[in-house]
Length: 371
Image (cartoon, rainbow, N blue to C red; front, side, top):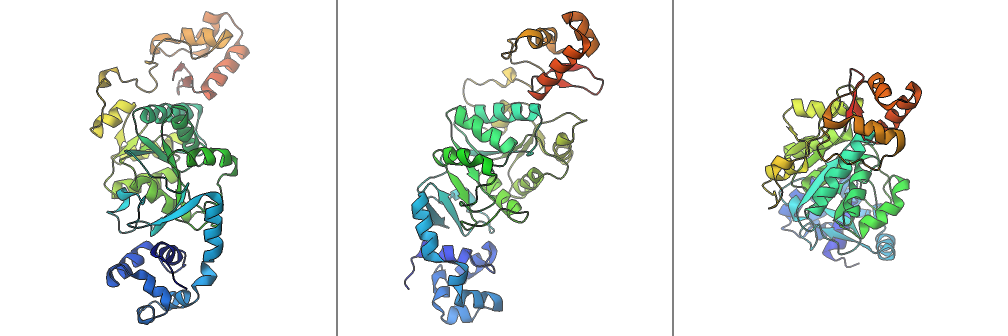
């Protein structure tokens, strides 16, 4: 059976005993002709890894090539290996870069500068709002927003980039035939039409705790920098941030409320030396990519309400409360009851709904301020 180079590399990548670093060593030893390993010749027998030798002899059991190629054709996907056209060149410096990537849709490329936005799967209303604001503005400035298509911050970032008419790409922690979460199936199709869906895992591989960290190194690897919006103390976003730092990439962190568990990871990153940012302009300036016409002095800082005094579509009691929170001055709920003339339970409910929507934030002293 004659195999082309891309198919051979796809087979090798699917073997349990073959990792990216070992593959790189073998590629150097065989001067790029790694497909010879599948021919059962002296190269395969000379391997010191007994388990891998057995997998090479029985590779069809691990990689049903005809079935995989048929599935790729049916869904309009393909496989691009190291050095192939479309393989992200940003990954080239890393020894642990994927052997190859499954790509949906076929022919998609990560065009233009990429930046990652990651965060918790259970963001607060504030976190959702900030993720959308950053992703939308970066997409409008020509950046490709990269994330992992998980629930929460990832989804908000993808949706905002699409809504802004920009590019966004997802890197999956499982195979293309295993959309995770299932609720993002429709989003997956829209991302495929944008900057594509990418993964190093075989088509039917389920995402799990081992695959997500592997995925995260690709998210950071293809990006100029990583923005962390909200992350718990042990969130997967911290792994992405650590990998970015190891790759020499800047890590930008949005500060959060000190009494919220969703902010614990972000504050830990800041203590460890990540760069605190409060607006897109600060990120672009640090990356030396601040477009002409954007002035950092006009930066809309998080939590100050400096994006203008217009009501964000609020009506009735919520609109009144928004107006009473002008000038960034915190107000106690009792004072807001007095100012609005409403009763306590109604005002508390309105404030809770506004907080969940990300319009206001509640401090440790119980006072509210515009987000």
